[in-house]
Each structure stands twice: as structure tokens, then as C-alpha cells.
Length: 386
Image 1 (cartoon, rainbow, N blue to C red):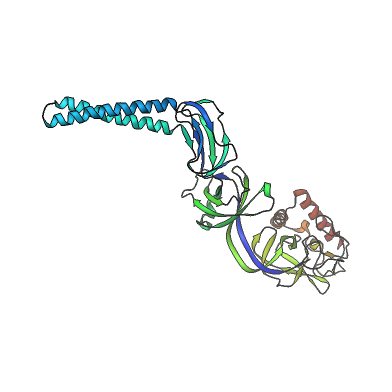
Image 2: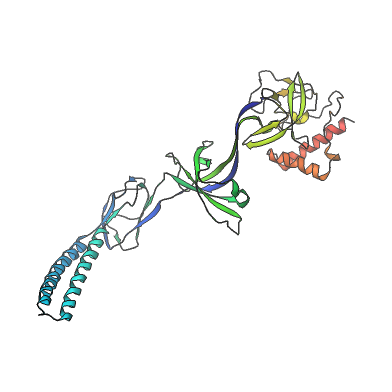
């Protein structure tokens, strides 16, 4: 039994994605030499500019000093040529040669200083060191991978949304996701980017969500994503389990004065195991959530001992036919000759009606075998009424 309640309910687009870091880089060597210092280890949090490792710099420092001497000599020669040019005591060719040597010496010193800077490997941003590829004293050369650095917060989750849902997407749209490692815990997310083109091959649009890692999420995790597209406040909500599968339309059974009262309902939004009822039942009424497919309009029912309205779906009523089976189906039983008490006979349905009923059962999570068992019991009930 379930007491019809009024609460908010949302509609979601569901998709899957893999978490990834927006900032995730490989740090490689940019000069030659052995590693003479390792300052960090895998799993360390580092700050932007922090030294991660140092390559031996003695040879490069010597080259820097040589460049300084060469620059000083080239500057003296250039200054001398500049003075003599004013006195017209030096040819234009000699002046240009001294000027060129001076410019070259300055560039050489700057190049050697840059190479000296490459001997210290620094973090380009705040992040977590997730891989270390280098060993102490290992000789490296330009391009040798040394570390991998990643920024875990926030994380990104790219998903693919069908083109037909494009009108429901917008930047900043709220969502949540779940990951296997943390059970039913929800992680809040929002739409960060929407790719402006549709993939012509798949007919989908790439949507990138931003999610807070909360110190537990990691890049590479597989996530189920629920992108909110609508929300109704103050909606009448019942479990999906309350919907009867023994009819073509959407119906529920309301417990009223000790009997089951069949109601046609109009459905609204669906969220998880609950569905919005737009019409057909009112707040405070009690709907049957187990065994309703064995009921018909006016069947006497009673609440099982120790069970009160509002319990979780799967607990509820007893019927004249006895306890329900694991599919929530009461055994075939007559209903005291009440009109229409035998319900629908699948044998007399059109192919379209039968397919509609099977689709409803699949939506409730029944397997093909369970669906066939359910239909056979309905046939038996109908035959027992003749």
C-alpha cells in the first residue's frame, strides 16, 4: 500500500560518460642530462611552480658563463665600432659585422639561460601527481616522459545526447551523476559546454558537464548521468509499482472501504521508481502496490497485519485469492461474480493491444519469460470466469 503524496518530481535525460580531468598533462624533459633530484612522488598534491625534479645543470651553467664572456667581448667591439663610425674611421661593413656579432652573443646567452631553466621541472598548475616515469640518476633527453599531472577538481564528464533533445539543453543546466564505487550517492553537476555541431554519423550532440570531485571521484570512472529537463512542484506521486499491468491504459487500484477501486489515470513526469499522476487519484488516497494485477474493480481487500499505508512498495494487501507471488501476481481466483471481474483476456486482444501491454510490462522491468507467465495467468483467470 502507498499513500499518494504531494512532492516535487523531475524529468531527466539519461546518458553515460567517463570522467576526465580538464587539466591533464604529461611533463617531459626539454634538455639532456641525468636526474640529480626528485622532489615528489605519485599521489602528491603540488602547487603551480613547485619543483618536481632537477636535471644536472653543471655543463649548461658553464655554457652560460662562456656566453657571458663572449657577450662582453662582442659588446666592447660593437661600442668601439659605433664610436669610430661617428668619426668615419670604420667601414660600414666592419660596423655591421661587429653589430651582428653583438646581437648573436646576446641571443646565445638568452638561449643558454633558457636551457638552464629547463633543468628544473616545475608544475604548470595546481594538481595531483598521478604518474612518475623517471628514476633518480636516470639520463634523460628532450621528449623523455617524466611525470603526469592532473587537476581533479572540477572534473569533466562528456556525454552524447540525441539531436532530438537539443531544444532541452542549455548552459548551466543542472544534473547529477552516480558511479559504481559510491553506490546510490549523487554528485551534483552542471552543463559546462554544448558542442555547436551535430555529429552526422551518430546524430548526437556532445555535452560536457562539470562535476565536483568531492575528494572521491577520479578520472576514468564510468558514470551514469541524469540531466534535468523539467521539474513539477507539488505533484501527486506514486510508485511505478502501483500501475496495473492488466490493462491497456494506465490504471491503479485505490483501497476504498475495504475494496479495490479501479481508476484510470493520466501520467506525467517519471523519476526513478516514481511517476506523477495528473488525474485519477487525489492526495491522501491509498493505492495498492502489490497484487493489483490479480484485482478487479470491487474486489474485497484488507491490509496485511503490521503493514500501514506509506510502506515501501512490495508490502500491502491480501486478497480472497491468497498471497501474491514474487511477480506481484495473485493466483487465479473468482471475484464473487462482479461485473468485469475477470479483467482483460490476452487471447481476445488485437496485436496492437497485446504489444502495448507487453511494452508496459517491460517498462516495469519484467523479463520476456515473466511477461509470458503474467499473460498466461490472465488467460487462466479469464477462462475460470466462464
